[in-house]
Figure 1 (spheres, helix red, strand yellow):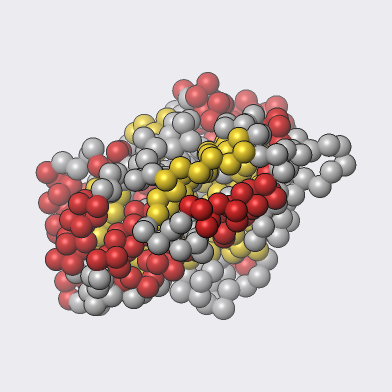
Figure 2 (cartoon, helix red, strand yellow):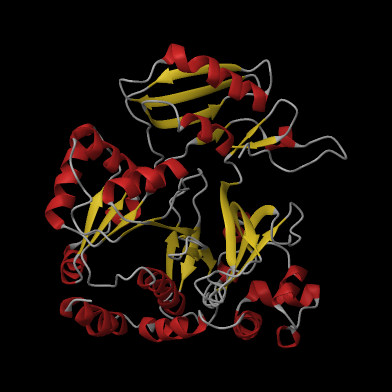
Amino acid sequence: MSPYTSLCANVLFPLHERLKGHRTAGAMREFMRSQWLEPQALAALQLQRLRDLLEHSRDHVPYYRDLFERVGLRPEALASAAELAKLPLLTKHIIRAEFGRLTADDASGFRVFSTTGSTGDPLRFGLGKLRVSYDVAAKWRATKWWGVDIGDPEIVAWSSPIELSTQDRVRRVRDKIFRSKLLATISLSPERLDALIDEIRRFEPRMLYGYPSSIALIAQRARARGIRLDDLGVRVVFTTAERLYPHQRSVISEAFGCPVADGYGGRDSGFIASECPEGQLHVAADYLVVEVVDDGGNPLPPGEAGEVVVTHLFSHDFPLIRYRTGDVAVLDDQRCPCGRGLPLMREVKGRTNDFLIAADGAKVHDVAFAMVLRDMPGMQQFKIVQESLERTQLQLVVGPEFRVADARPKLEATFRHFLGADLRLEIEIVDAIVPERSGKYRYVVTRVPESAAAPPAGADTAARSGA
């Protein structure tokens, strides 16, 4: 660690957070200790923090006061985090309808934020200073796992209009002090990609942070132009906000000559899981309770795919208790070789609406198609739009070596195998995949009603992945 990085990480940034009324440095010290706890000790710490959250919610949050009384939940008598299953799931609809009653009467430094609405369903929710402190600390801890720290030169390749619209003079001064440079990637023409490559080469970052789709396009453009990015001293590329595909990980790692560390979370749910140098995705169980549940809200065992439900242990001002994220993932019961006691998440499969619907009602995950598309010569980007059970559109951004006539038979065979023999596949070559208003890229869109995915009684409901 350079002297300047040490000054930023140990003095300037903690002071910056304290002046904002945050206890980030203290939260970071807690996290650096608790990550090494044995599973039993970690579960005890999680339970204590959960009781604190539930007791505060009962005493200060009208919505939860009424809910706990209705279901007979006594926070002080909670024997394990598993007892959360007594509570119904918290949905976006409930948050919108009960916003005022979900806000604590003693909320301090409370601010209203919103999600980007990348799925067309933006949400307003509240953040207090306690939660923000622990959110920042959770991200900070994951950064330190890779031998980089606050104050090391950082490029943030970001597409969300929320962050891009709040870059005022104060933020620019702060970023300059902490050697962080924000690059807007919401529109990526060849000219813009060239400009971003030039900026990265001038800045010589030690880490990059951003959307995998954007960073992968930068890497592909640099490779196509014969420009090296692996001579800059980048130690790690952190990806977040979108699903990281294997082919994106490969092209980014090869271009920058460093590992790619994926992170999973959301503006509403917090930093749920982060990848360690052993390649394992650790759930931040000292900060959240993470469940994977079936359609009825019942927790599923490790190894089974279901919707991710989060209880944020430091969301006292606006409690998120059993909050439905809309994501699909699989938990793991193995121990990571890195020695951290934080549990593992085996796989994040994507959003619940990142599935296509087959003619027989089965859900088919996008990986079934991504594995085929990624290996086709000249393939750069793709987007699948399922217009109906009978018609699917495939948008492709390709290089000169791609041949539609050569690829069509394999693509049609793949899509018909998973979606139905009578499917009509429309292939369109486009100059670029247009991002959502949030700046994120959605590679799978289905306009088929979810009810069409209901299998016959007794049928296997496991989603087909083709992996």
